[in-house]
Image (cartoon, rainbow, N blue to C red):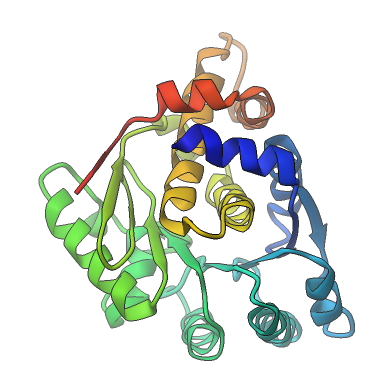
Length: 273
């Protein structure tokens, strides 16, 4: 299943418009190129909707908000909805400030999202306003563990039904759900948390996977999460004794560039319930 999803990304090479944060914009572009998609970044209101019109998918990331880009996100999202293009939301830091939280709620109210991807604290904030967020990282009190896995999976599935799309929660164990099914994914490596922007890269990657596989958004989002985690594992194996997180960032992108559909099929570690 997942191998065909990656094949479709490489064959179709979807053009993905990213309105993302300036901390990780370059890495998101390179991750899209590595998976076989094509990136374009445009966040000025004068062109945001127009650029969305020539793309096949849209990724919105609120990591470095300002009042100008909020308007661009809304314009681009509505244009994508009008054209029937999939839109991914990464609500970075929702719960950390009023601006981020209110913007995330406004985006969800005015735009239909195919996938919402965040950490568990961000998703809890969107679902109930009760999540806690330590900057852009999940609060330790919200962490997904084996002991809380089933409870969290039920929560994510219910929020997916509420939001009308797919919800992907990433952490030590990743959960991807729609209103009916849940993928629990155990790919990845703890060192990925030492690289700024792996989540941002994953959201861009998810937009590419879902855009290239419009009929199976749940499976496409789950494949993206597995692929990113698998590349984290592969990249960590390359680490030498003098390598650090900057090298690791590059190794992850390299691993995505070299990832074959067969390797994704064999290396994806997940269960469905």
